[in-house]
Length: 314
Image 1 (cartoon, rainbow, N blue to C red):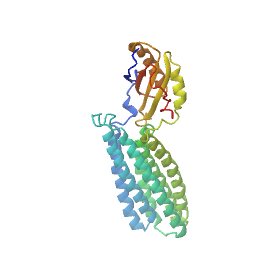
Image 2 (image 1 turned 30 degrees about the vertical axis):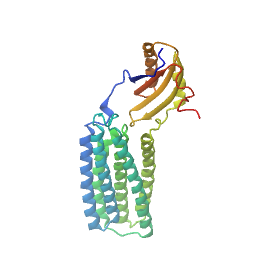
Image 3 (image 1 turned 135 degrees about the horizontal axis):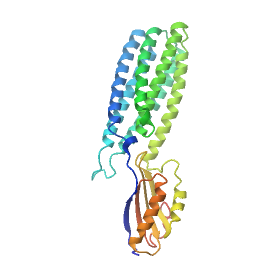
Image 4 (image 1 turned 180 degrees about the vertical axis):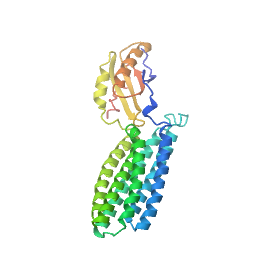
């Protein structure tokens, strides 16, 4: 067995690169259409808000405008993340989508804070508006938002960036419903406080979902271990592979929400380098079960004295 460091790159055998739920060209046109639809809604609500004297419609228009801009970022992130690896970006551009999700979630949190402030102002100073115009314009917005949500619903489950854009649209949909309900109550009953109340409830929902996306995006950008993965339990499982004496310098991180990397130094019993293939294949089997699809192993024999599982012992 050689005691020199033998670097073995080991992509997952049998790993199927299925792009049906990955960032793909199918999503690009859909997202572009949704962006254009958002800008149309924005224009309609601005005009309607001015004519009706409705601050809620104008606020919702600003919400839609920010969503359209955020989804433009998502669209370009999809294009960038689809670029192949090169000598400057050996891991590729996948994290462009994570950076966009981080930005989108941050914008959503900012919008929530803005909506809280607007709701407070409306509680303090209720405004009389032309409820009929508000209802019809909000109905148009609701139809467009509903169509946008349907277009992105499928992909929102498997991509953090699309999920952020999807949540923007969900927030818009609920906002449209709130404006419609508020318009009806203002038009028929002159009840003006219900609009800010619904705004607060919607903002709480947006805030909760946005913080979840923000945490996930930050964890990925900080190269944290995937949520739900017990690294020490995984190491214990790998230590049970025949021929392995210990594992150290372990690193597990996500490139994005679908690509997880694992690297480690593996001390093995004295054996020919060719025999480490059996150990490598056993590692593949274990790691595949934990959703890890990119593996780099450095095999050693009695190497890295004093090393701990994650780093050096003090």
